[in-house]
Amino acid sequence: MKVDVFCHILPKRYKEELYKKAPPKFYSSKYADATQSLIDLDARFRVMDKYSDYVQVLSIGSPPPENVLSPKKAAELCKIGNDELAELVFKYPDRFVGAVASLPMNDVDAAVKEADRAIKDLRLRGVQIFTDVNGKPIDASEFLPLYERMQYHNLPILIHPRRQSNTPDYPGESASKYLVWTIFGWPYETSVAMTRLVFSGIFEKFPNLKVISHHAGGMIPYFAKRIQISNDFNEMRLGLRYEAHLTKSPLEYFRMFYGDTAVYGNTSALVCACDFFGADNLLFATDMPYDNQSGNRFIYETIRSIENMEVSTVEKTKIFEENPRRIFRLPV
Image (cartoon, rainbow, N blue to C red):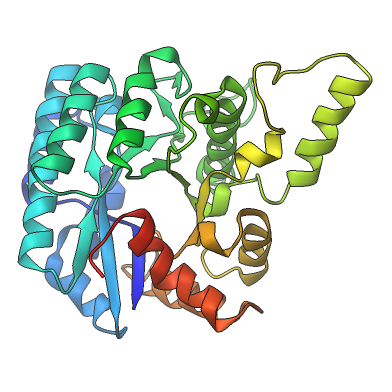
């Protein structure tokens, strides 16, 4: 079995309400309209049917609700979407083995309440948040109740990167060029969010918190030695110890994250991620359906890249199935 833990959908009622309530031009509208299998179940199933023993854990696609809606409207929209996700899992258990909740992060109390409802009443298997909340870092103290709650539920938080095309590459410009904002900006935002969680002591406060980082942990695995040596230099030569309140080295905390395999077929990147996180902390994910083949290319390339890794069959089975089942507490 191959359990895809990070793939996206826009359920019908959710999409309709989003388009009604959001500003006329929000950045994901073109993506939704151009990606048939994001909004059309039959198109999605045709892609999934190409692969035997392939199932999905659903999450709602961009934009973040809090990015385009008021707190009240975001909470209403999340309830609609989470109800639909639960319906999809119930109706198509051979396709969707689980789903993760969307949360109105511009109202933390409402977000915690919706996480409880989604997990207890709808039986969703985690939550999705983004790398910032309307410019606020996710290590801000106001978000601690959500982390405490998710540790209590023993279910994962999926962190999706957020950066928009109107974030310029250079200060003198007004927008990003050449897709820099997403190709490189999203892994960067993931890395920043992970770093803030580490050095702020979130894992010190909540040592059993499960956090899944998208795109194989962004830049972290590749720059692990740079992280270590830079912090050693700052501490030993400059007397700056950013982690004074921590009890472990920075890399030990970074390795408490889980990484996914959504690097679009890059086997060498997966090897780097597996070396860093370990085979027990790497989960199969494709980022379906945002490619030029309605998700088929991402699924094919990701499966191929994992199968080409020079690791044992046991480790590949962990990545494809055992880790997703264990971390999301899915039925065996």
